[in-house]
Amino acid sequence: MSGVLINIVELMLIAAVVAVIARRLSLPYTVGLVLTGVVLAATRYKSDTVLTHDFIFDVVLPPLLFEAAINIHWKELRRDAVPVLALAICGTILAAAVVAVGLVFGLGWPLRSALIFGVLISATDPVSVIAMFKDNGVTGRLRLLVESESLFNDGVAAVLFSLVLAWAQTTDGASTVPPEIGRTLLLSVGGGMLAGLVCAGGAIAIAGRTSDHLVESALTMVTAYGSFLLAEHFGCSGVLATVSAGLLMGNLGLLGDGEGGRISRRGREFVLAFWDFIAFVANSLVFLLIGLTVAGVSFDRLGWVDLMAVIGLVLLSRAMTVYPICALFVRTNWRISMGEQHVLWWGGLRGALGLALALSLPTTLPLRNEILVATFGVVVFSVVAQGLSMPLLLNRRGTPIPSTEPE
View 1 (cartoon, rainbow, N blue to C red):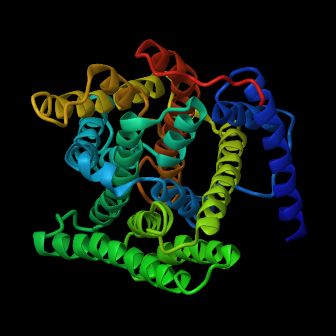
View 2: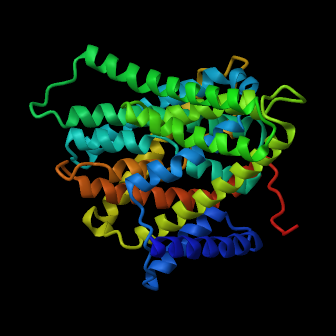
View 3: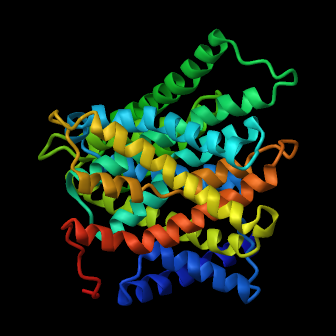
């Protein structure tokens, strides 16, 4: 245990140094972390903290999802709920289908493996997207669109993944019957949202009886992890549970003006700063570990040509999601400008969620190792190439990039 603690302290010290250097060099922080992880791996640095499905799902995702959700105003989300849900639900399904079809007919993958990879790689990961937008100081409607879609399609992808994996593991190859699909969806989606609302509602009720900012912060921590664990315990979506809990806690407890929130004014300021710090710690650990892990991945197993084809296919699937769906709203109040569509497309980063789902695949699944290699390849390209070029795209569309000089 002491070895793990020492290792975490070392990683956080490294992350702090990388943050300072990245700011000086105007380099996206997440890119700096991944590259630093690769360098550490090349120097044979041994990490006792390992990137696993359980580490990502149980340690990293809940605080990152919760921190993003508590900062989304319901009024703003409600205004753009239709395009956000269209991109999150229809877009995730469409992107998964495009990737699966491309893998089957282009690379000769079996249908089951292609579908599983298509689903796990289809969601834009909030861990990467939110970090990127914070790095670049993006605010307003564009940030709301990208972050909200990322949060919701994260949950959609997790639910679809469980359905597709269950179908792929059937011994006779029979399709899951519609009633079974309906029951699974109801349990996963409805149960997850219910767990999140119950946990957040209980925490808000207790917080209303105290003005101690430390107690209020502790309640938000219990809500973030408790909603996730409760939902997962009953076979529901922990991702949707934490997102639902964060939205309710944020809008009823933290984002109210004046005396509108159930949490004290001092508590709101402290809690928001506290979660900003927790998100920094979680981001630092996961991106450093991605760099450390990817350095040991044998990409030859998939082949560099096939890997480039997979990356291109993922980018194509994102384009075929964003532009056609946004075109549906061109003559409505929900119109999304072409510049914003470009950001939605290129800003659809992949990250920790896809890795967690890939790492959870059973060893008996055909092409499991190829799926892992492809996932790591897409994630690294996404974080490094897309992350590095995103400031240029934002500058071209007129989005101001804040100064990176230390204050």
